Amino acid sequence: MAPPEHPPLLKVSALWHLARTSPNRMTRFFALAELVCFPLSLLTILALLASAGLRVGGVDLPTWWTRFAMPLLAAGAVGYLTNYIAVRMLFEPYSREGWHWLRLLTLGMWRQGLIPARKNDLAGAVGKEVSDRLLTPRAIADEFNRVVSAALDDQDFRRKLPQMVGPLLREGIPVAMAKLGPELTAMVRDGVAAGLTGDNVKALVRDVVLPWVGSEANRGPLVDGMVAFIGGQSPRLVGFMKERVYRLRESNQLAGMAINFAESSGMLDWDEIARSIVTEVGSETGRAEVAKGIDKLTASLGDAFDRAGGGASLDGLRGHAADFAAKMVADTLAAKLPEVAGRFIDSPVFWDWAADHGIPALKPRLSAWLDEHGHELVGKRFDVAGRVQSAVVAMDTASMHAMVDNVATEQLGAIQVLGYFLGLATGVPLVFLL
View: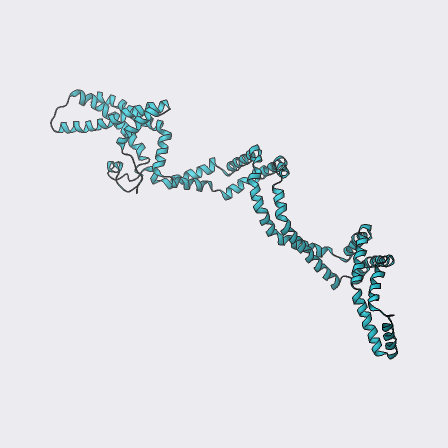
């Protein structure tokens, strides 16, 4: 269906409204002039046709009408209506289908207005001119750079950073860390496996383990633990001794008689032996011996790794230590990251730093990058010509016509009124020639 179009007679009401309401004095003047010229031109054409009909019918018309008034009025009407029709032909008819007075006036030769008929070509030309001369990639990039710089300098923008960016960080950090988690754990595993060499293990024993064991604060609890462990193992030790003694009793009759005598007389009391072990280990002398044993054990760790060399033993240690460290990192991230991220996002100190230092430090770097690469990015990603062309093609022809009328009413009115007065001026010598 073709867009709605206004017949010429509605022009009178539109001109009257414009003459009363326009804030522009020249627009009101030409609207009033058209308000006179338009109906006068139509009436003149009707009068010309009526006069021609009367003359054909044999009616004598007054000389002042045929020799003076009619030529002047006809010349002015032709000048006005010619320009009026030319202006209307820019847009009308909007469609090639349906009835239109211009199509009827031209006996069907004028099928569609210039602008709707060449809309695609005009849209392409406008898009190209806009992209080549007005909205060039450099101009768009410079304007974008200016807007970004102004936004970064705006104090209200900086104050609203927590509200704008905080929810994004709260949602994005856990997601990002979940994706980076495998990479982090793999990095930890690789780092531990690569760094756990024989020399590093000996350095760990020398610089960490031995000082820790030798510390008075750690030595007492460590000896207590070892004493408790040995005391807890005393029933197993006594059981092992008892088993060996009984084997001896079964294999040697004389020894068996001595063992039976010792047990029956109470000289060999296994429970007392177990208690003696606990008591002896827990005594001051026993604790001192345990401490010496711990010192010897830790001191021999380095030599033990030297003897293990770089073979399967050290490789196994690397693998277990790397897996343990990776799991510890993964568990820690899963347990602590939400809390740490929330505390970080809710920290006023962070947002104060971002507003006072982070953004000022970011701005010159961002501006320099946009200045250097912005026009390339715009040229590759932003089709100005295509967007303008699509917008013009999609624009309704009636809306485009109304837009031009609103913007250029004064100029279009001047063209049409000037046509009337030029025609009228041409009619003056015509009167004398007649």
